[in-house]
Image 1 (cartoon, protein in one colour):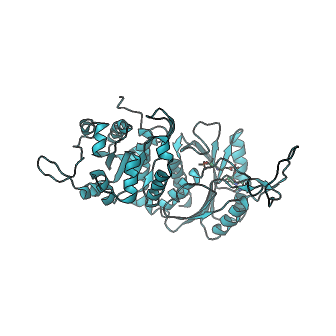
Image 2 (cartoon, rainbow, N blue to C red):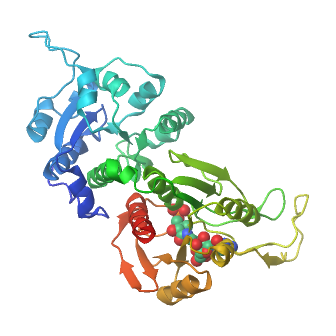
Image 3 (spheres, helix red, strand yellow):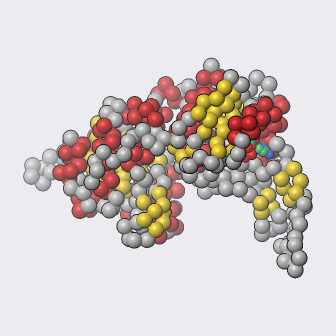
Length: 420
Ligand code: PMT
């Protein structure tokens, strides 16, 4: 096993997240999964970034990675039992929870997630979860069918609703030999996520947008053709949700106008669900009236069927033509009425990126525009990363491949500096 295990700077982590880990206390929980071997790499990355790491393991986790390995890497004794059978010394879950700046459970099995979701406390890792007051992060790892099972998904949703942060597993080859979604995220990504989280938890940062109100649009719109079919696009909402979360984490009041998605609502935001571009227009323009700014991240349909059939269209022998008419441009409307308020746009391009983005910046009266191109690997729809360039009237700033959470932090930084 290569304990260097990748570099915390990549992909898309940046020195700031590594900095945020320095001197912070991470409690690393390990459960009984084949992915436990990655916890060694993760521990090493956290230590290299200057974090203090203590490790709590479930009894089963010891079958997958030895306490000796984890004690050597963390430079702390490993905690498994409620007390030491040799001398009766008590391992206090309360003080462990109090000690940690972040409790990171990686890998988190379906079994542990289920127990967390219903408050079962039959091992030290779980009692510590129940008493921890710090941010909790879980990185699920399991077989694809276990991950997709409605009970696992319900447990994850319940945990997310309680504020537990979930690092989505990746797709790929699994220990079962099957291929699908369920692989624990790579250690560099997990360490970066924790760094970003702790950076955002900085008490000064938490108040930096207090009193400000923002509208954020996110996700795809859906334009009905008939009761069965629609026109839409690939936006998952991840980028917009990350922005809404980053602004809310700094104390802003955020109205998140969202297309259809299964993402959990970011803590501290008011979510307004919409389907069509027309509905998004109504919700976004209404919320903009008393806002200080807006971030237009949604992928909005530019065209909608001219008429919506009330009944299912039946197939005939020939071709079918659907007449499309233009939708209203929400961003352009907000740009026309913005006055001194801040308006941030996005441009998703496939060619002549810079020219198209600059044209949108001017036409929609954005203060800056976030350009992402489908020609860049890891950028655009659905994934957890994005590669963006900020363009304003003074120039451009190209960012490396970052997680969407970190792109959102950079956007929030820029908004903050423009408002001050
Ligand atoms: O949701 P994810 O899967 O995470 O993907 C993120 C993303 C790729 C959707 C996001 O990063 C992004 O690029 N969003 C904007 C996509 C887009 O539709 O761009 P556009 O170039 O077509 O539109 C330009 C700007 O005008 C955008 O700010 C858009 O929100 C806005 N617009 C467009 C049309 C319209 N009718 N109303 C609008 O407000």
